[in-house]
Image (cartoon, rainbow, N blue to C red; front, side, top):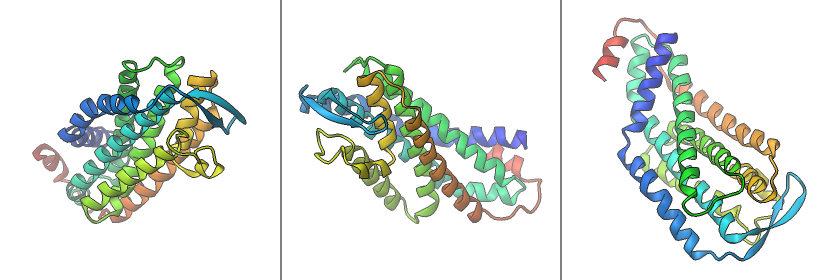
Length: 261
C-alpha cells in the first residue's frame, strides 16, 4: 500500500505539473492581475465587516482589492489545474485499478497532490503580492491564499469527477470563482457585508486575510471554516471517484502500466 501510494502521488503530481497552460497562467496572470486590478482601484477607505469578531473596520480599498484579486487568481488556477489533471487521468486510473492497484492509494494520492499544489500556488501568490503591497501580516494573507486554493483544489476534484465535458467544468470553475471572490469585496459589491456571504467558500479566507492585515488578529475559526469547505468538497469528490472506479481484479500489470505511462 505504501509503495502504491508513493507511486500514485508522483503520478498525480506529474499529471498536474505537465499542464503548461496552468503554469503560464500562474507565472504571468497573477502579477498582471494584481497590476490591472490595483490600477483601477483607489486608496479610498472602505468599511469592511469582520463578522467573526463582530467589528467593522475602515480598510484601504486598494489593498483589500489586492487580497480578493489574489484569491480570485489562485482559485481559478488551482481549480483548473486539479480539474484538468483529474479528467486526463480517469482512463489511466481505471486501468491501474483493473490491474491490481488499490483505489484507496489512488484516492489518497490525488488528495495529497491537490493539497501540495494548493500550498505552492497560494505561497507564490503571496510572494508576488509583495511587489504591489507589503501587508503588515503577510503570513495571514499567505495562509488565507493557501486555504482558498485548497478549497478550490477540492472543488476542481469534485467537478472533475461529476461533469461529462471539459467545457462544462471550465465554465463552472470560472463562474464560481469570479462570483465568489467578487461578492466578498465591498469596493465592488455594496452588499459585501451581508450575512449571506458566510455561505460562500471564499468568505473564510477573505475574513482571515483581512483580519490579519488590517486588524492584527488571527481568526482561527475562519481557518477551520475554510478547511471544512475543503473537506466537504474533497469528501464528495472522492466518494464519487471511488464509486466510478472499477473493482480490483488481480495484480501483475500495474507496474508495467506505471512504467509505460
